[in-house]
Amino acid sequence: MLGFFISGVMSLWGLPEWQTIPEETRPKVTEAIEAYADIVGSREPFEDIIGPLYMEMASRGGRQQLGQYFTPWGVASMMAQMTAGEKPEDNGQLIKVCDPACGSGVMLLAFAHHVLFNWGEDALIRLAVTGCDIDAYCARIMALQLVANCNIFNLKLGEVLVLRGDSLFPDKGMETIVHATAPTVPNVLPAQAPERLAALVDAAHAHPNVYQHELFAAA
Image (cartoon, rainbow, N blue to C red; front, side):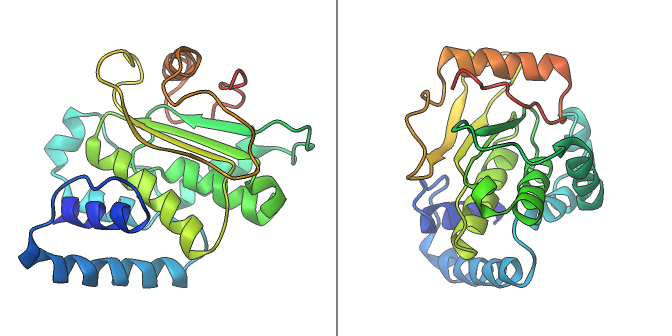
């Protein structure tokens, strides 16, 4: 059912449908999407709503096998405050952050939340968010949460890039889940440009799940 829900939300926001939703299941999926939209709209932008749900639904053994341990929202918010620093000057460049093992996207969601409430929408539209995870569900959860929040709250991120694959070996079946830019953003590199994938490997080797500023400076 979670896969159908993810597919429904992605399709609603113009992303490719992941799993074909059976006709008899569509009413329940529609109800779930409406409930999700209501919950998101009642909270602050970019809060991690689906991550805790997925953590409860996934088997503990499966999470351990993949090395999945989900960061609580409070911890992610604290890390965003500790790592963000001062608001960067607008020099025409994107503010780039990357999580090479993003899970449901909580770390990057927390960073976007911090940027919005501390630096303002003018900084948010300069923010380039890149996340990658080996778990097909997690990568899509991150994508739909970012896109849904932008649509529900009428916000714009400078760039969103979500990949599904192994950050250490991006040449082995890496999949682009979503790659989108704001209308004001100039041309950027393709989603799987060699420079991006090389930076992703560097991020994974440096320290997974820690904000990596300027890793995609070449983009």
